[in-house]
Image 1: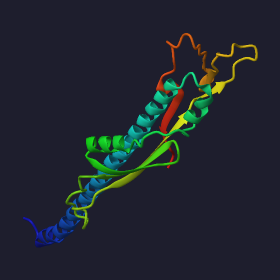
Image 2: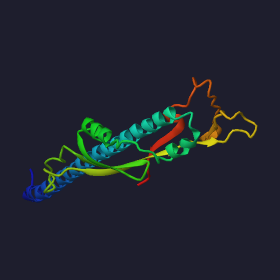
Image 3: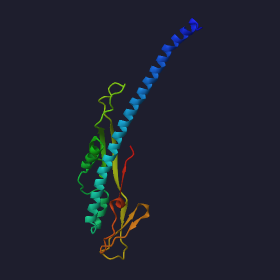
Image 4: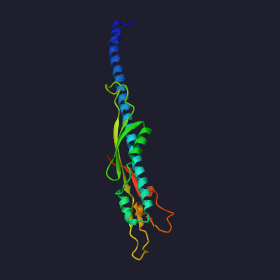
Length: 199
């Protein structure tokens, strides 16, 4: 026969059980909210990174085109490699890539050879137990820079007047350029590095 005390103990334990379960549920919902916010921030950072890199890569390609157009004018090479020539602003590429990543961006040149982008997600964090997240969007920034990999090496003193400088590049690579045979030329990725700057 069950004693009245056993029923009494069970009755006292039930509120404790409800409190513990409720606390665990609240904790789980809080972790879920944190996860949602982290995912939204990650999406914003991905959009910012991709947009900044896209703008920088577009400028890298335009600089390469300039170098190819003026390959027989070696006195102009260094200005091209250092970004001291006019290149149209490539922020339109940042906008294009942001749209692909469901975000909007603010983009501006960062020095002669870089772009700084701030990306905001179109989606919000969403409804969570944390007040104010329903309309909250994530914003992250990224800066991409272009760096010349190569520098011109003057021709030997006894070289023909029409001789072009060789290009000495990072990693010990060297391009021997001949004005009468320009079939094998460096590609954009040979001439320039494009990477995200450390924040």
